[in-house]
Length: 393
Ligand code: ZLV
Ligand code: CA
Ligand code: ZN
Image (cartoon, rainbow, N blue to C red; front, side, top):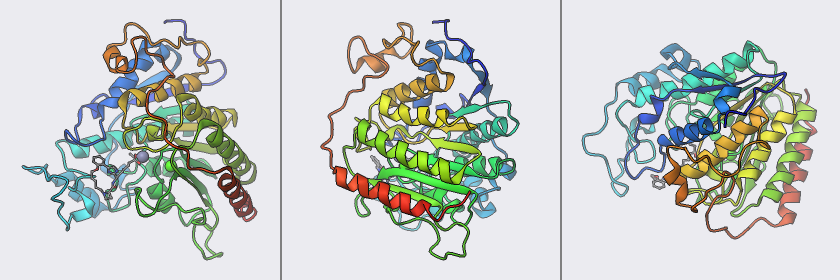
């Protein structure tokens, strides 16, 4: 399909590094970097590369990583070696340095390279936005929102999002960060806790005792001290299992609409974690590719410089569907592409696990029981609306 045209009047850039995708967290680990290869293969099969500026991103330098991370942590990350015998799930070592080497954040061959390439893509995307060479920059290899200044967490070692937003802040007065991964975006929220120049918004499954990372309650909104400029600048949308496209769309449009009106960001950073899709191996929601993509469409309509990051996503063929659909939204060709997957996709057998004639948007997976009563969603909207009274542009 060579009929995909460059969008008129704006530029989309695509940032990736094929060397990143070769890394392995280990056989049983749910994070599979090859899902990036699968996504790219589908994006290219649709001919979308002809409608974007494509860049092979460089690895971020030590200095660039040190914009956010502590040098103690980076030095350790740069020298640790994979364990000769990987620890099994039952036998976790209790005293891990910087939370490295457990079963969530294992040490593997080339770990430092993998991390610096993920951050390099995100940083390249941010630079293209700052120089106005791109209006929408895509970095599906980024979005690792749990990493802390001096600690790995939840499959994330380097917080590429924080590093990219720090770059945006050199040119943009206010940045809106939105996180639609099924997990709470705790690392990004924490990094910008004390500033009113970044507003963070995370939609996530919330169950403090049974779902990672356990933070992100409705009334966790930043520093409690009113004199701290970060007060009220963290928005949390805690949800339960089985939320549908319609419910999510209502919450997202209402909440993001009001935030853009009040906070007046000059750029948006959107983490598109695909583990909020139905049928995800770790997720709990019922979102379809359309519902997930509607979040990208809404941001695009705001007509602000936009970075799209990847993130979670543990059913690789569905990750590829969502990120391909969202790339098409960025380009503006979503109504022109064939819903039947291209015949010549090298990985077509992956998608044939679903049906003989797999489509882009149809994902398989047992629908989960919806545990989000409409009344609770209204309470959430109400709380955020009241919170925004304290926010000034
Ligand atoms: O998608 O993990 O629940 C961005 C992202 O947001 C935990 N971790 C922690 C707390 C106690 N542990 C359990 C340790 C489990 C170790 C291995 C798994 C292995 C197989 C299957 C599932 C998991 C797993 N781990 C499921 N949930 C976890 C979370 C971390 C979730 C990170 C989400 C990352 C990329
Ligand atoms: Ca989230
Ligand atoms: Zn996640």
